[in-house]
Every structure is written in C-alpha cells, then in structure tokens.
Amino acid sequence: MKKGAALFLAVFGAFTICYGQTGQEALRKYQAAAAAFATVSYSVQRVDTFPDGSVWNHQGRGIMQRDAKSQLLKARFLGTRLDVHRSFLYDGKAGFDLDDSTKTYQVEQDPYLPGVLGGPGGQMLVEELFTIDPSYQEVTYSRSAQGPVITLHYPDRPKIDVRNRYTYLVLDEKTGLPKVVKTKEQKTGGTRVVMKTLSNLRVNNPADASTLNSTTFLSAYTAAASATPIARPTLLNKQAPAFRLTSFDKKPVALSSYLGKVVLLDMWTTSCSPCIASMPDIQRLQEKYRQRGLAVVGVLMDPGNAARAQGILKRQGAAYLNVSGDEATEKAYQVNEYPRYLLVDKQGKVVLDITGGGQDELIESAVKKAL
Image 1 (cartoon, rainbow, N blue to C red):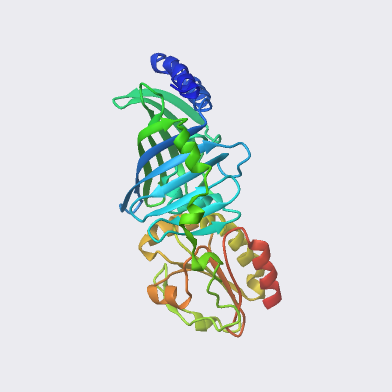
Image 2: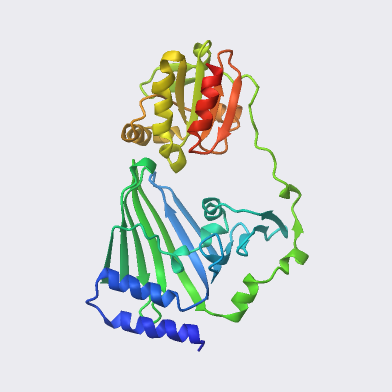
C-alpha cells in the first residue's frame, strides 16, 4: 500500500470508531486525512433535481491532484462526461476543453472556475475531495444506514436566492472517503438538489498522476477550428427589435411606447445567480435616473417560473417593471447568456449591449451619456 493511502486509512481508522465526536472533530479528521493523499480518481454519477421538478442525470470520471500553485481548486484535474464525450483538463495554469469524439481541443488560458464547473467535464468534478467551502455556519456528525455523515449548514444568501443550503458527506466505513456528496438548497419555487455518487475511488495511483501531467493528447488531438474565440452576437448600434410582451400584472408592454425615453432592458432567468445579485444595483439606477427619463424593464426569459420570479424581485427590493419573455424575443435579441443588459436610447437604438453581473458602473456611465 502506498504511504499516502496508508496514512489516509490510519487517520480515518480513528474516525470510524469515534461515534461520539462532534461535527468539528469529524471535519478536522476528514480534512487531515484528505491532505494525506496527493491524487485521487473516481467514477461518478451526478443527479441534479431542479425546483421545477426536472431531473438531470449523467455519469463521468474524474482525476484530481493537489497543486498548491494552481489557481483553481488548488489542484490539477481532468473531468470527463461520458454521454457527450467531453472532457476538461486543467494543468494548473491553462485549461483544455476536449471533444473526445472529434479528437479536437480548445485552449483556455485563464479559465473561470464557475464556467469550468458548469461545463460538461467540470460537472463531473467532486471538489469536496480537496476543498471544503469554509463559509459554513454549523457542522454536525451523525450516522446513517449508509455510513458516517458530516453535514455542513451554510448561511442564507438571499441576494442569489439561496436558503437552507446543506452539504452532506456520506463516508465509506473502511476508507473514510466520500461515497456520496449531496448539496441541497431552497430556492423560490422549490428545492434544488445535486447528488454525486462516487465509485471506483483510488488514491495516489501513478497512472492517474501521469495522465494529469501528460500532454500527449496534443499530438493525438487537433486544435478546433473555433479555438479562436468567436465574437458574441451583439445588437450594438442597431435598432432594438420591437416586442410586445405581458407584464407580471397582465398588462401589455410594447417597446415602441418608450420612444423618447432611455430604456434599460435586463434579460434574466430565475436560475441565474449573477442576475439576482445585480438587482439592487439595477433598482438603484432606476430610482436615481427615473425623473431624467430612464425606464428599466426586466425581461424574464424563463416565464414558466413567473411565481418564483416575483418572490425573487420582492426579496431583492426590485420594484422596476418586469415582463415575461418569449421565444420570439429570445431569437430577435440572440439571447444565450445571462444577465444580458441592453441600453436603448431615445431613438430606439442600442447603445450598450453587455452580459454578466456586477457591471452597474459601466451601465450607469452609458445611462448618463444617453440621457
């Protein structure tokens, strides 16, 4: 047995027989044991259950190696989602988005962690094997029919519509490694659950370390034709497409009725955390510039969740007008990222077209110029 694996088992040997320990004690032992191995590989089945009741179920593999110099998760990693034959390899500096069916790849020189974790390969990563989010407010230890359980309770984050968030680590009796990592959180309109069930775990295997530290795929794969970033579709300096939509209080709203005013369109969905977090800033702009002719119109792009959307707006103190979007609007505005902000001037021309939250200063600058 490898030295790291032997130490891991030795540490967790104490864990499994100490039934009366506190949550903090159990977590410290788990983290100490996890620090004893450098590389871990596994198979994983990930099941997401969304507030609307829909279920997403996929399988994959992962390899993770500790790397203190890495900017992402303090690790090098490879995640593979089997059904779409997509992988993501991160060597500690750059990322490689791999299409295993076409044997092509794209390079990401400075990958963004939320983007990585949301991609097919990143969805198969189990970051809790190396990193526990330290913002928990309470940790408990218990035993279940499946084995020991460490439960982490996190503070509510109403700005991104997250309440009653718990992460459960269900541990294997013999190795102390997680068998299941489950995160459950309450959102307006329902509960979201992400469950990752692990199997075939192994630690400190030289072949896994070799896979992560090898770039031989570069000779077997070719750079994808789209490796050079393609410009996002934009309506900048074009006339804003006309629409006639319905407000949450069932009144018709036409963009044409705002000619002579400056209109800020906030296109969002109830599952978009940056959209929700930015709402107080958008409300501030509405209040500050309303008398000078600014009208803010939120466009909900998942209208089936209108009830949940109204709860989010109320909690965020966002009192500006919101309407329900439709497929025609989505197509006309070429919406595929959220939040999407478009500023329409008094003549109906788009003078700002950006995506991403936390850009209130840029938006405000454009508003002042357009008024």
